[in-house]
Length: 108
Image (cartoon, rainbow, N blue to C red):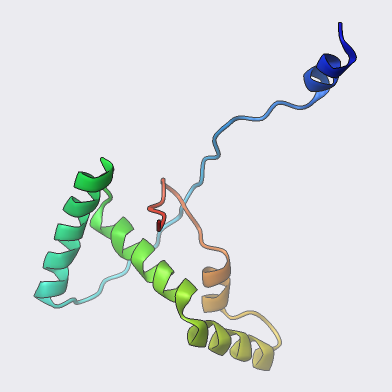
């Protein structure tokens, strides 16, 4: 057996895919009817463009996470709050380590 081939066989083999689990908490919000209609339409848009059909919950979850991730002022504010408290706030923990249960809709 060639030397190079043996090294490959000795390596630990890992699955090609990574399963992410998300743990959701139920909450309730009132949204304007036009926003609700846009959520429904955006679900259809994603389905038509990608073949995937997210639930409205998944869509709102990913949309809000994208907002939190891109809002530098919010992230700075969280960091300041954590520094003042001497520990990470719950909101910062959620922003820094999102919990996922099902395949997430990832921004392009």
